[in-house]
Length: 200
Image 1 (cartoon, rainbow, N blue to C red):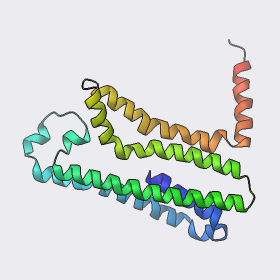
Image 2: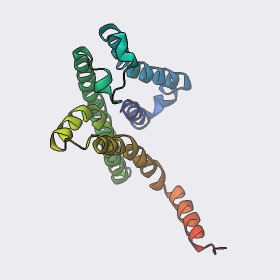
Image 3: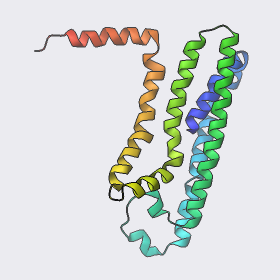
Image 4: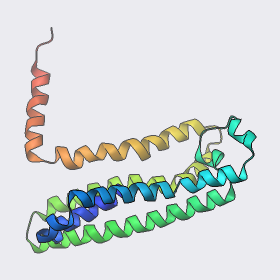
């Protein structure tokens, strides 16, 4: 979600402030943004490690537990911090996406550009972001599913992994690849060539 938020900000700069794009979006600033994403992601997890070391006995580090965040970082401080950080990230990313996407749509309409293509791209991005945002509500989803299906913990974890990790990355090739006319033309050509090759 943080990657998508910064990508949306980059699209906003490219569409709404095109004359300053080369000044704002430089390689050095891209590295800074990547560092910020890594730092923010680390700050949401590293305190849990310190809380674990401070609150759990040493025997816990040698024990066998089900490998999930809630069973390893089971302190109430960790759970409250996780919920708080998820809520903050959820709100900040959604506000960023709503603001940037609506501004991009308005600029595309005002410029009399292909507003339909821009709208469809934004809707696909919105769907992708919705799938990514489920990471922030995953603990509540797991609790609800375990309440409904108490014996299906491994199936629930696998299903949420597919929804949260695989599907959002599957949408990216559709947004950036198959919707591009040139890519689509060559994709169809090579796909049809593969289907027409004689089998040996």
